[in-house]
Length: 132
Image (cartoon, rainbow, N blue to C red; front, side, top):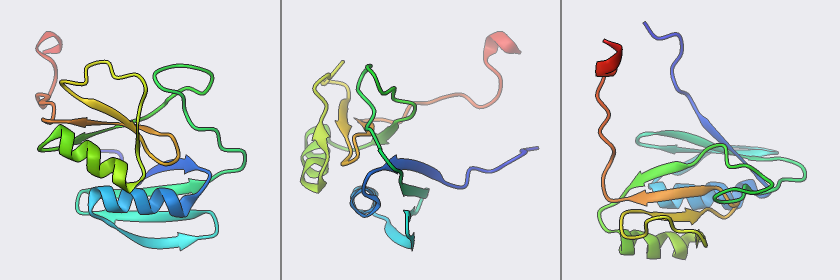
């Protein structure tokens, strides 16, 4: 039995409106709630929150002074097309691309890395075979 259910993913940023608008457009969602320091985006598959924090510093990719603690993997039908559309919405291509023929790393307007991938990873449900 689950102890909790995933409710919301919150991303820190300098500009909640810019970040919420970007993710709403990229994921086909809508901004459903605003407060002084946050904006919540709801999508068919879940919700995320853009939270304005004082002295925000974007994470560095793939390493550096400001660690990256989370990133998204987004399944797309066509890498080139999805990359172009994400950039039109305000993303930028990360300088480091470990395997651009397999996936693309982009940065949202607040600098959070996210990956565009042509397929979703398949993870088996239940314990790993070694754990059984």
